[in-house]
Image 1 (tube, rainbow, N blue to C red):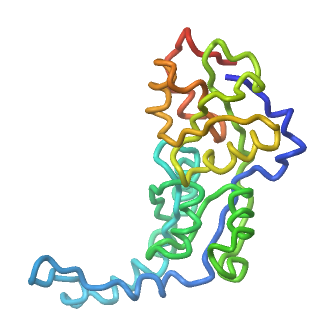
Image 2 (image 1 turned 30 degrees about the horizontal axis):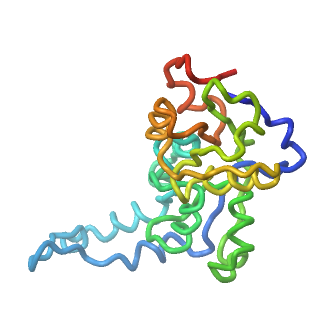
Image 3 (image 1 turned 180 degrees about the horizontal axis):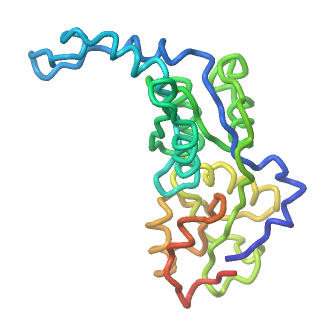
Length: 239
């Protein structure tokens, strides 16, 4: 694992996780949910059983938070928020497994039941600049910085520096995740041309063992679950 954080400190001072909230209320998201149906038969609902008050109480202060991939650091922080802020019927945070930093913003904008999202600051900035979603600044509010995000490079033993990755295949996780945005951006700014591969890190590690991929690029906080649980491999560099 090549630690090169200090090299990029000036370039990526804004690389940290941020908490965002949609300007729409949770009531608006939950009120429009249709009655579920199975075939031609209506499913018995809480409303049909006279439990409207209970439905309103449960939904009014339950906030769904888009928390990223199961193996990522966002989901861990979301779970900690849920435990720390739990206040019974007055406030409930519901962490939801999603596809990552990029998709979290889209889920916040378009998916029912999502009231809060965690993403990376540079991913949010890119979303605003891209113009794919109109008037993002008016539709999403920034809440708070959560934690500084480190990046890690897990490399095969023949890789001695980042410059050695020129022309090599680099795993940037699945598209829509934080590494899939930040990784190519970092290598572009360093002037190192690599061949991006977008595949889940679990599969990418297996491809590293066979030499199909030279490196995987990972974002996260300490402890990094992916690397902490990785069994020692003599063919990999770590530090």
